[in-house]
Image (cartoon, rainbow, N blue to C red; front, side, top):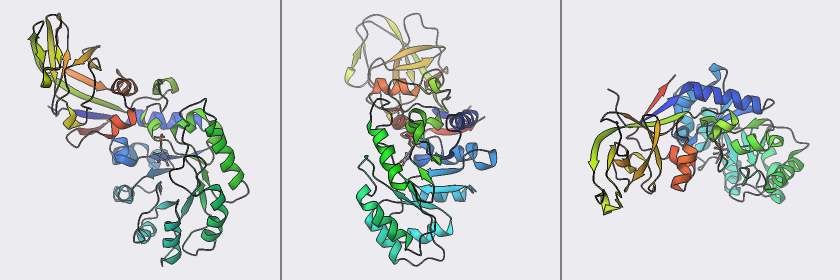
Amino acid sequence: MKPFPRAEISRCALQSNLAQLRLIAPNSKVMAVVKANGYGHGLLNVAESVGKYNGGADGFGLARLEEALQLRDGGVKGKLLLLEGFFRQSDLPILVTHNIDTVVHHESQLQMLETVSLDQPVTVWIKIDTGMHRLGFSLAQFDDVYQRLQACPQVAKPIHFMTHFACADEPDNQLTQLQIDAFERKIKSLEGDCTLANSAGTLFWPSSQADWIRPGIALYGVSPLAGDKGSNHKLVPAMELVSNLIAVREHKAGDSVGYGAFWTAKKDTRLGVVAIGYGDGYPRNAPEGTPVWINGRRVPIVGRVSMDMLTVDLGADAQDNVGDNVQLWGKALAVEEVAEYIGTIAYELVTKLTPRVLVELLD
Ligand SMILES: *Cc1c(COP(=O)(O)O)cnc(C)c1O
C-alpha cells in the first residue's frame, strides 16, 4: 500500500494548464516559475511535465541558485532565470558554466559584475522598480544602470528587462496599469526581451504579457485572485493532498476531543481521525469547520489539528470506515477555498508541505 499522506501531482493538469496559459497569452513565451520546489509539487516533477522536450515551457524561473543547479543536474536544457538574482560574486562563474540568466536589481550586484573576471559574459535582466518597492532599480536610476551594464564586458548583450506587480491580483487597482506604463516608457526603444506578468498579470492584465509571461500559481491550477478558483480560468488543480482515516469513533454529546479539549460535541456523533497534521504541513490554525473531503462529501474539522492527526465530525449516521481516503485539497475541494477558511493563501498551503509528505507524480 502507498504511504499516507501523499501529494499526488497530475502531469496532465500541469500540461493542460500550460496549454491554457498559452491560449491566454498567445504571443508570449512562457517562463514557468518553479521556485520553492515547484510550489511544493516537486521541482523536477514540474520541469519534467512542462519541459521543452514536451513542447512545453520556454524557460524556468527560480529564486535560488541551488534550485537552478538542481534543474541542470536533472537534465533540463531550457532558459533558467534567477528571479532574485545572484547573491555572491562567487555565484557568477557558476551562472556562466551552467548557462543561467540572472536578474540584477541592486547596486551591490553591479559592483560584483564590474569587478569579476569571467570566461564568458552572463545574461542579465535589469529589474526595474515600477511600484512594488521590494527589489529593483528606480526609474530615476535606470538610465545610469543600463549604461554601466552596457559598458560591462562581463554582461552579455542584449540586456533584458523585467518588473514585478504589487497588486495585479486586484483587477480594480490602477497601480498595475501605472506600473505597465512606467515600464513601457522606460524600455520602449531598447533592444532586449521584456517580462512583467506573474499569473495575475497574465490572467487579468493582458497588456502586460509582453515577450515572456512568468506564471507560477496558475501553472499549478490555482487562481491568484481572492474568492476565485483556477477552474474559472479553465485551470486544473495539479495537486491532490490525500490521506486516510485511521480511526472512526463513537462520540457522545458533551465529550470533547483532542488537545486543550478544544471542541465539545453538542450531540452524539461519529468522529474520524485523519492521518495528517501540522508535522506534514497542514496548518495548525485551521479553524473548526474547515472542510475535508471524505466519500463524496465535505465534513468539518473539529478540535485542534495536532502534529500527526486531525479530527473530523463525520455525523451520527456516517458509514465511513478505517482506511477510507480523505482529500485535504484537490479537484473535489479547491485549495483556494481551504486557504480562505484558514486565513491564508493557496500559495502558502502548497509550498509548506513537509518532507514527510510523499510527493508523487502521476499521469
Ligand atoms: C514568484 C514569482 C512569480 C510567479 O508569481 P505567481 O503569482 O505565482 O504567478 C513571477 N515573478 C517573480 C519575480 C516571482 O518572484
